[in-house]
Length: 428
Image 1 (tube, rainbow, N blue to C red):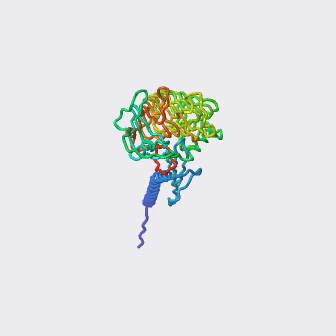
Image 2: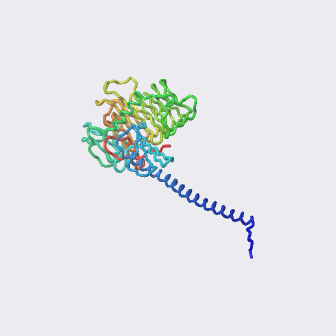
Image 3: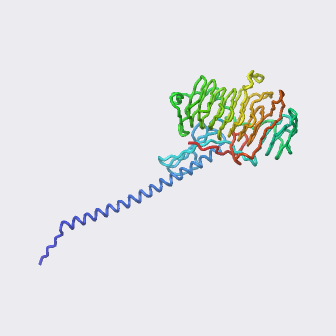
C-alpha cells in the first residue's frame, strides 16, 4: 500500500524563512563581531595616537638643534602608526609640533617650549663679573640664589637715602663669570632675520587687516602674516594664533586691540596704557609699555640691536634704544635685550618703573635700571640707577628681585648651556 505524503507550501515557506532568518542572524553576529573588533582597534589606535604624540613632544623637549624638515621618529615600530615631529622658533621661544597617525586618523599636539626654571635651584640674579660690586640702596630687596662679581655686594647712599634692609642679600651668594649665559645661536639668528629680512613670500601668506575685525589662524595651519612698510595701528581688532604682524616702520597697539599668541615685529613698538593680551613683540630700536598694562604668560618684549659696527652711536631721543615699562604694568613672561657690541656704556637698555612688575625672566646684555619688582630671574651685564641727575653704576635703588611670588616651575629663553626644557603653553 502506497502512502502519499505531501508537504504543504506554507510549511516550505516557513522553513525557508527560518533558514534566511538564521543566516541573517549569523551574518549580523559576524558583522557585529567584526565591527566591535574594528572599533576597538580604532579606539585603541586613537588612544595610542594621543600617547604617541606625548612621546613625540617629549622627544622635542630633548632635541638640541632645529631641523627645517619634519622628522619621523624611528623608535616606534608598529604597523600603520607613525610619529612626526617638528621644532622651530616662535618669537624668542620654541614651537614644537608632534603628529601621530594611525591609518587615516591623525592627532596633533602643538606647544610653546622654553627652558625650565626652578625657583629653588635656578639663580634669582646673575650679575656679570665686571669687577664692580653691586650696591643696594633704599628699600631694595634681593631674595634667592645670587651670582655676583668677586667684589660682592655693598650698601650705599643715593639722594640722602641709605640701605634699609637687615641683610644685603636674602639667600645664597655665588661668584659670577666674565660672560653672561649665552642664548642659543639660532635664537639670535632668527631675531635678526625677522627684523631685517622677513616678508610673506606669496599672496596666500597674507591676511588683510582692513577687511576683518576678528582674525584667527590656528597653529595647525601655515603661518600667516599682516605686513606693511608703513606704520601699523592696531585698534578694535581681535587677532589670535599663528600670525606674524610686521611693519618696516612702527606698530602701535591700542588698548581696544585684543592680541593672543601673535608675534609683532617693527623697529619701534608702542603699547598703549591699559592694554591687555598675551603676545610677543620684537623691535630693533625701542619698545614702550604704557601704564597699567597686563600681558599674560608667556608674553615677551625683545629688543635686538645689531650695533657692533657703530658702538659709540647715541640717539638724541632718550627713549630710543631701550625697553621702557611704565608704572603699574604687569608683564608675565620674558623681557630681553640683546646687542652685538662688546664694549660697555652708560645708557639704560631696560627701564622698569616704580610699581611695575615682571613675573618671569629678564635677560639684559646691557644696563638695567630696576625701580620696580622682578619676580623670577634676572640675568644682566650691569645695573644703572639714574637718580638726582647722576648715573650710579651697578646700583639698585628701591628695586626688588625675588623668587617667591611666582610658580615654582616656569619657563625662560633657551640658553647654549645644557638645561632641561618645559612646555610653556599648549597651542591650538
